[in-house]
Image 1 (spheres, rainbow, N blue to C red):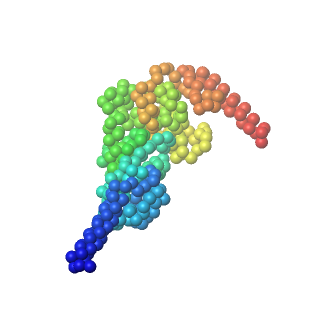
Image 2 (image 1 turned 120 degrees about the horizontal axis):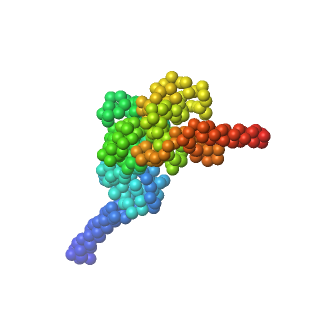
Image 3 (image 1 turned 120 degrees about the vertical axis):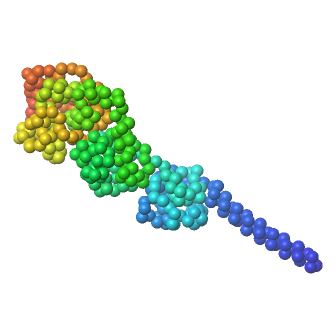
Length: 349
């Protein structure tokens, strides 16, 4: 073999090695940067104390990682160990390894829906509801709900803070701080209280805070939304006549919602929230009223009803009355049915 031929073979061999190496590098680049590496959609929650290994395990379990070595290379390239940010990240079957690594490093979160709805009448439960959907812990939220200086920044107090919260679904980043959450509450509160709604409140002789107080009583009276405007009308009729509101939900509030039934002895409780003893509205809302209850107070049904009691149909509705004698008739009908049901229940036992 001539020297020239040997040199040519060496050059070809070296070229082949370089080509193979280049192909290997390009192949890895393609796999890591261009080829999707996950088999299903997955919401990845990265907490501040999580390690990269835990994140990769979570991806493997939840997103169905197809090539774990590709994820390892991408995470190493992006220095994910030291640069990873907490957050809520959505990974799906179109994501490449490098894209997921960049998401974590640059904090490309997908917003979280924080929903506040249903019965919201205790601060600790509200804190738990928020904490169950966001990264903040319930203790921090509960502390904020009772922090006089913090709430003063929003124009509220620990006593009337229920009025600040307008129940809704809020789109927020999962990592939002307690302050971020309350900033959003204030933004939605201000958006709700338009000049038109403020004018409607004035027509009823109420301030926005008083509307919230009245709405919280309406919310405590019924779970039937179609009754909200009727019951709002009843309480507004009493309020405008200077009558005591005599609202059972305010008594329940006085006992921190621990009563199974409200009895006559409970109506004498010494509290400014006892509407059986004091004329006018309580000092603050007794729960977080739904938007529909706020709207019911602003747009009540016009009628002359002063009284109402539970329907003997036991379907959650109420019977309404203009006069006291009619109300007594409705109340006796309910009591008869209640007694009959108790006797029937006892007979079965």
